[in-house]
Image (cartoon, rainbow, N blue to C red; front, side):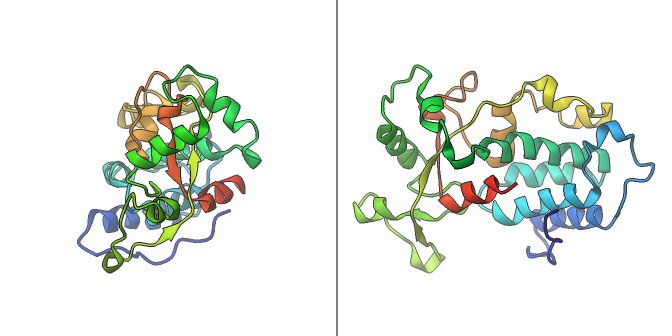
Length: 232
């Protein structure tokens, strides 16, 4: 189970603070009791659901506007929050689940695309992502060395090596909505595809939502995110 959530790190008047407080209240429940039927909980305890969302807020501060809005919109409804956490696990964390990156290049390049090589795809993603990891905001060190971008030290920017992330084959809507209550499905009606979920919760833009495995639908990420998610 993830580590307990730390104290709220966000500015008290911010939406992030409000969303994180909702996660802390969910974590404090301890058990679902009679809140909702077991079919909706995906075997997620309140602690697991709360920590998935809470740590997502902490780690994705540069790209979590949609996640913040969704958590606040749940209005502390446990069945909706756990549904949101489940979507985050299967469609956001799940896109990293490719142990040791086996087959990643063949999966990525198996679709027709205008970018015909791994290096071209990485260059495309770097330029689109402003030469930074989409999650941490850390700058790609090679791009800095090549004079493609500049670093704002005053803003606390840091340089790191980055890798090319890609979307692995995801579940169908039937797979990731089974068990959601009617209330949760109404609240999460925007979750029509893995692409829609990722775009909403992580703010990753896709060139074509109908084919999220194209090289153009890759993104820039630091290796530690791949390694961390592989440990789940």
